[in-house]
Image (cartoon, rainbow, N blue to C red; front, side, top):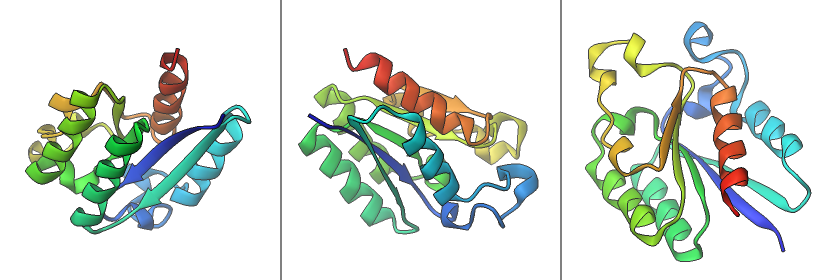
Length: 147
């Protein structure tokens, strides 16, 4: 049986590789996805998705709740203000489905408005500041915790 991990990405992350590489690195989201897929066992599928649309991201969270699929989430700008996304993510917590919030950069070393996450309070854990390795660390934790 294949285990699926949803790796969900919010606004502007489709621009990785060209968007502020000094902050976010030079890897594209496709590069990160390929690295994740190569790093997991054969019985694990990485389902990497990105959207700039809040409603679409919320729909994917609902899908994860309904299917009981663990989520690695980089909410990007939605991190700081999307209570709708937070409410959707809280459903994962109530259902006992792992949610790991990830960030490429360390929000606490950046502008003050980035210091607040409305998602962290309902996440199983948060990994930030390790570039693309933030995703790898999150996926590794999900795999080790699946029992």
